[in-house]
Amino acid sequence: MALDGCGLACKYILFIFNLIFALVGFAFLGLGLWLRFSNNTRGIFEIETLNSSAFVVGVTVLIVLGTVMLIVVMFGDYGACNEKRYALQVFSVLLALLAGVEIVVGVLAYFRSETVGMNMAEFYTSMYILYVKNGGDPAIGVALTGIHKMLHCCGVTGISVIELAQQTCPKPDGFLEHIAMPNCPGIITSVFESKAPLVMGFFVGTGALLITALVCAAILMQQLKKISQDITSYYTTVY
Image 1 (cartoon, helix red, strand yellow):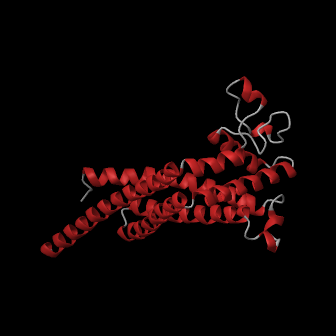
Image 2 (tube, one colour; image 1 turned 60 degrees about the vertical axis):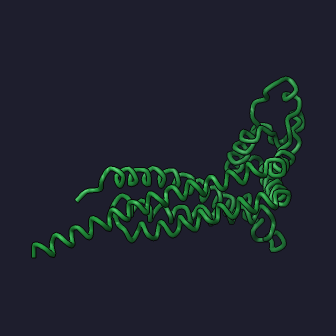
Image 3 (cartoon, helix red, strand yellow; image 1 turned 90 degrees about the horizontal axis):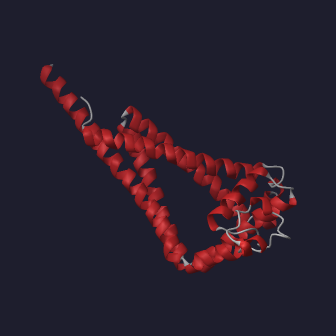
């Protein structure tokens, strides 16, 4: 027996969801491992007094989050593509935990926006210093370029004449930005302080997307269970 229209739609939705989730997971894990084991940054993790710094914590979070996301994808893809209920059950549990964590992080970011903003600014500054100190590490350069384009800021100074990471900055919008752009630590802090509801909305919205995938997994599991029961009933009747 085959899945009906709703079950089939959920199967393909889960496949697309897991594909996107895998790409993000690989990006997080790859960047985290590069920052952890690169010759330019490895020494930071060997200094005990820096083990609680924002950079070390941030890299650890990237590695753990990327690993967890790939584990979720493994169960989700196997369960959806091969129509295995037990794999989908594990996928659902992990997805529910991730959704809960996303929502909790969003709420905490809202109520502790000033502290979170300062920690994120410290993490950015650590990456910036490492980039400049080591002559332009490629992985850190990609991360800085992404941050600069997303926030439309430029380094720790923003002044084009003296900015040491100018090559990672976005194109200026006007004449004044050719001279000076907003500095990133200040922008990061202000984003978390002034746009705390938006930040919370991002995390809660991501949690809602995970819950949508969870609903699809539940529908698919229900249909697979029904098919299994129908097959069992058929063979029981025949034999």
